[in-house]
Amino acid sequence: MGVGSGSAGLLWLVAVAGAGTMVVELAAVRLLAPWFGSSQAVWTNVIGVVLFALALGYFLGSKLAARPQPLAALGWVLAFGAASTAWLPALAAPVADLFMPAGVTLDRAAELFVWGSLASAALLFAPAAVALGCVGPLAVEIVARRSGGHAGSAGGKVLCASTLGSLAGTFGTTHFALPGLGLKGTFLLAGVCLGVLSLISFVFQRRATWPGIGALVCVVLSFAAATRTPSPTGTLLAEVQSAYQTVRVVETGAGAERMRQLQVNEGLDSFQSVWQPESGLLPVGYYYNYFCLPPWWSGAQGTWRVMVLGLGAGTSWRVLEGSLPAGVRLVATGAEIDPAVIDLAREFLELAPQSPERQTLAGWDARAALRAMQGQFDEIILDTYANQMEMPAHLCSVEFFREVRGRLAPGGWLAINIGGFSLNDPVVQAVAATAATAFQSAALCVRVPFSRNVVAYLKANGTPFVPGDSGWSLAEGPVAKLLPPVEISSRWALIHPATPAPLSDDRNPIERLQAQSILLAAQACAEREER
Image (cartoon, rainbow, N blue to C red; front, side):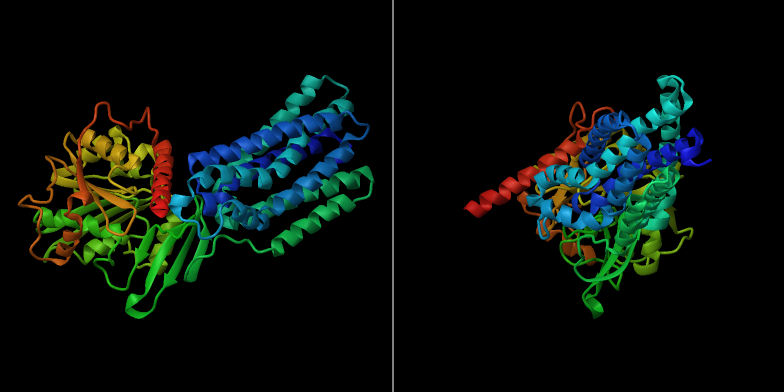
C-alpha cells in the first residue's frame, strides 16, 4: 500500500526513518574516530548531540504537524534528511580538521579530543538528526487524521514502527552495513532510502517531485565526493572498514629498512602493530622489545608458552620468535577482537597461520579469551589498546588481573604495555598498583626509551628483578642491550599494592585518568618550551 493511500505504508516509512536515525548515531563515532578516537567521551558527545537534535526535531515536527498539509512537510524533511545523511562522509574531513588540525601531537590534543569531537558532532550530525526527529510527530498527525481515532492509538503505532526500524538499523549497521559497505556506503544507503521515501511521498500527493529528486541528486553527488581520513605517512597498502574501526596498513622505507604499520583509527602519527622483514628485536623505541625479557630472566628451556591479549597483527610473536634463548621453542596464543585486523595481518604482516603452536582467537574479547583457554602460560602479555591511549576498563581491573594471575604457571610473568608519559603518570600508577594488588607483590615499571610507553612486569610468585639484583643483568643474548638504557633510577620504579585497588569492575575511572595523563603531559611540554 502506498504512502498516500493508507497508514500501513506510512508506518513503513517511519520504520525506515527509525533505521536511518540509528545509522547516523552508530556510524557517527566511526566517522569521527580517525581524528578523535572512539572513547566513552566521544560516544557521549555524539549521543548527546543526536538526542538534543532529535528533541529539537520532535518540537519542530509538532509545529509542522499543525499545518494543513503535514504529508507535504514530511516529504520535505525526508528530502533534507536524505541529503544531510548522504553527505556526512564527504563533510567529515573538512569539519574535523577545523578542530583537530593535521600535525597536532598527542600531548597537545587533550582538550581537542573532548571539545573538538563535540563541536564536530554538532556540525555534522545535528542537521540529519533534527530532520529525522520531525518524522515522528508528522506521522502521528497523519495517521490520526486518516483513522479518525485517538491520538494515543496513532502515537503507539508510530512509536512501535519507529522502534522496530531502529532495532533493525542497530543490528544492520553494526553487523552488515559497516563491514560490507563501509562508512561511505552505509551513509549512502541511508540517504538513498530516505530520498526514495521523500520522492514517493510527493508522487502520491501529486505534487511537484523536485524536492525528492533533488535529494536523490545530492545522494548521487555525495557518492562521487571522496571520503578522506587523515593521510598516512608512507604508502597505503590496504584500508578496510571493520565492524569496530577503520584499519589500514602503511609501508615506509625500503630494503632492509622497510617497515609496515597497522593503524586503527589513528590520526596522530601512531600505530597498533609494526612489521619488519626479519623477526626479532625492533629498532630502539619500540615497546614490544621489552616483552622479550621474562624468558631470559627465567632461564627458559624447552618451550615458552605465551598468551598475547590484544594480538593486533602479531608484532609480539615475531619479536619473541627472533629473541628467545637458543633452543627455546615459542608456543603462542593470541586474542584479537577485530577479525579484520587478523585478515590484514596475514596478508601484509606475515602473521603466522593457525597451527597447534600458533593459535589465533579472532573476534574474541581478551577477558573472554583468557577464561576460555586451557592450561597455564609462562608469560601473558597485555597490550589491549584502541586509538593510541584507550585501555578498556574491564581489562585493567583488579578482578581481571586476579584472573590473569590464575592462568600463569609457577614463576610466570605478566607484562603490561601502559601508555604513559612518565613513571608518575596517573594511568601508570593506577594500572600498576591495581595489578600489584591482584598479584600481592610489587610491579616493576620500566620506561621504554624514546616512547610514551611503560612496561610493567609482575611475577606470579614474587617481586620481579630490579636493577642491581643478581638476576637482572643478562651477559649474553640479543636482549642484553635493552637493559642499560633503563637501569638509571629515573627510568624504572617499583609500584606497590594499594588498598583498595585503584581500578575495579565496580569503580574504574580509567578514562578520566587517561585524560589527566594527556593534560599533565601538555602542561609539562608547555613548561619546557617556556624555559
